[in-house]
Length: 373
Ligand SMILES: Nc1ncnc2c1ncn2[C@@H]1O[C@H](COP(=O)(O)OP(=O)(O)OP(=O)(O)O)[C@@H](O)[C@H]1O
Image (tube, rainbow, N blue to C red; front, side, top):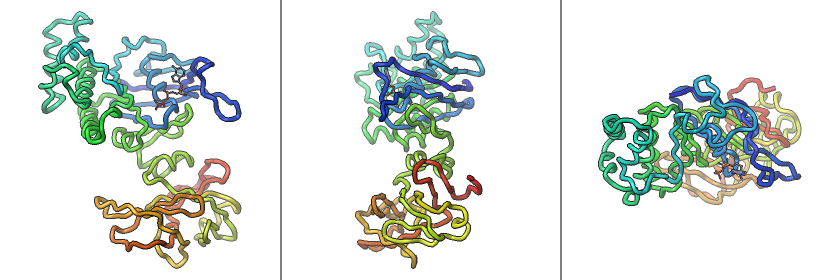
């Protein structure tokens, strides 16, 4: 197990394959990324396609070398150490099991190529199988083609664990599985990670999976990490508008607004600001950010919102009402028995509303945070 430090890593692929940004600018796959993982911690790396997640993982594994920056395991600089000397276990989307070997052979192969004794291999495979939990033993006697995707992924994970890696690197390990199996397998992986407490970097494009797996979550965009934190930190104190809208489902509504004489003017109406907020926000255009649970329904100063559709969430005893204010998509949490109406009136709960600059992603006001200026 190791403490990992990724220190200002920059990685640019060959010029002809670099992604172009609008305006002819080019950007590297990693743009000076820093991240620390505590011993035994799982950090999820989440972001949309092409943002650099896999490249980050490859640099940490030693499969790619950075142009600048360093990677340290327990304070040792391993930036240019070969992957096989780093003690990392890697699990990818395609299971990459040795197809001709049974589960047991897949686990024991490492000991064979490293000239370890058969007794050691036997003992370690047995210990790992025991720790992998119920039903794993039976997978040892089967070849990969006879296993389901989830089973193959369990064998792939066990094949890493049997080598006692310092670090686990997982890149979309369950994205090839169907929805039901994905759910089951993610619970299983999470349990294993907790049980073995191996430091893990877990890459996914799925926000919910990132939240489920990670002790902390790193949100990436265009080669940069925008913010790292627990789900609660990212949800309640997002560093910018991108993180605010990326984390949370349904997402935060972002409503173009104008601050004028202590009021917020939005498409379809006006809300009066409480005095502390009125004194804090600059007059002129801003963007108001409100999460589904941050609305008050049918207050006297509510702005009308036509309800386009409703989604009942029985497990939460709630209904989401979806509509628009101007161009902005809005989701509102309502009680499960909220009457089916074509229009509701909505007012932000001022204790929960965010304000962002109109032209940049900078937060102007984050609820619960006293001073941003
Ligand atoms: N071998 C390569 N050569 C050239 N460009 C590459 C190479 N690998 C990745 N890239 C580019 O670098 C950027 C980051 O890619 P990367 O695979 O790290 O993103 P990602 O976030 O993992 O994406 P995805 O979720 O689609 O796998 C992308 O623009 C990609 O096209």
